[in-house]
Image: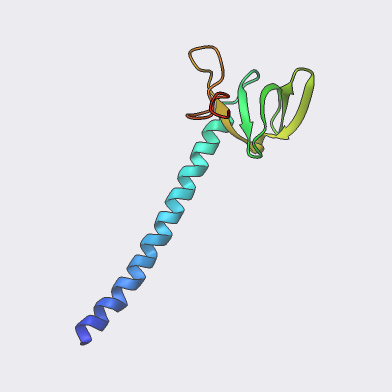
Length: 106
């Protein structure tokens, strides 16, 4: 029985260390992706904010991005609130991912 207790005493801390290591790795990877998105933002890009607001960047500085959400309507956002950059699709429209076209909403 002493072998079973010794293995359990070693295995539990090792598993906990692996779990914590994985959590740090995934957080660091997510931070790297966000940093890449933030550094690639330019005036004229279509973006989606963390709150789900879509718009086109019309002005930008180190801290604030101004988005045009409809013709003549401008909203200022902290640059860190921009979650994704929307890539234009081949057909000229904006693609925000699979299954999100206006036809799918009907």
